[in-house]
Image (cartoon, rainbow, N blue to C red):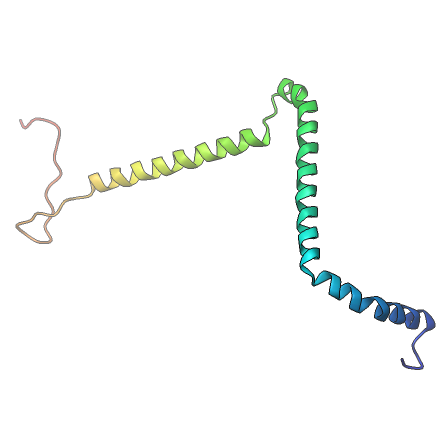
Length: 120
């Protein structure tokens, strides 16, 4: 330690050195990783349970106010994705059917568009 280091800093450094190695050993152990994973799962379970309780308490108010749930919004989002995909596929098929076809006898020459009206 240098002479210019304040006493409080020297005390912190000494305490840090005393606990540094044991804490590194603990955090590097498989037991710590397992405990951490169990803690995360327990926290998620508790948060989910609390969300269900709160959702159950506010469900009548939400329905009366006509406010959609998160699940409602996600379901609508998925339906919109499916419909968007279908519309894009239909638009591509329509563009392909309207594209001029090439005459097999003469390369580079397109067939004239066909009219639906009878001749005359």
